[in-house]
Length: 456
Image (cartoon, rainbow, N blue to C red):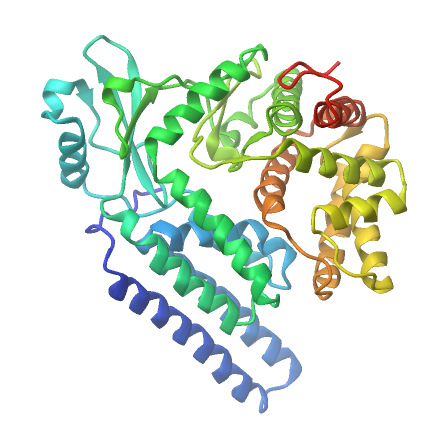
């Protein structure tokens, strides 16, 4: 695939960014209004074909605009790409929006050089033995380059896009307006405010490379007990709040790993993924909240490297214990406890019978793989995904069923991990792992075992 053409730095002025996003909203809403008018004079087949084409054209518009703006605009666009399967949109839109996960337009190297030298206080030639001007990748918030230290270590240098910090609040405000006026989020103001406040907090952490460096060191130590899981170490003398220098890990992307991986390597990689995920949720209460194939490296022996710890969600021990109780009441059916815990963590308000029925049915669809001693992700289990997708829109029609802020990134992490397990066709006794780790979280909250100890 040819490289994406370089561009000047993205606009940082709130006025210019709002104008760009506002123009996007106007074009999209105007296109649908025009089609509704034209549809009056079209037969059903022509109308459906025209609407399908319009969906795809608008998805391309979103990708083009958000990819150019980077920042929060692209980050929220990525979240939209991750949930598009649950919407009533054509499947081709998922692949178009999926471009936002890894194809931001590169920032010219002279801007990267200027940023690194300003942050580290010396010319690149004095700081590094080599510094590749071609980026390893360009994401919504930053660009990464391969380099080699004077001491010989091969590293990755991640550099925040210039002025990106100034764009976050304006982008979120504009996108919030787009989603509300476009009726994409048909939820009450309190819930929408909480969702965007949570996104704002996570973005604030991703814009602080001192925080990400601390996250890397925390997880490197905490997950060291898993033989085969590797986290990059940091090089503090080459790190600032806007430049992060870390070890360069070896391995292939999931797309490159799968065609040649042995069945044994696939199984080992999947086991490391799922065991590390459960450890993060139920023991560490700190989750790598951006799990997709681009943030993991896979080695031939099935070992994995985990990258990009900018987005980390941490949980209160009592909240995660109540979440565990709710999940356990779904796996081993206990509706009274399930609804009690759902109210406790603000998933359910009120006592609407239809809402409760749909929420219970959704929970049973989600936990179906955990109700069997051993299961293979993917294959026959794809029916589970279809059941969940069919129920989610019905559940969300009820305002008494809510998405509390602590669930947003937890379920994003769960969904991303499950997607990788499906592609690996991983077979595993998931029920036993969930049972052991969820009981541990409850025992910690109740003071029966020491916080940080290993699940029995």
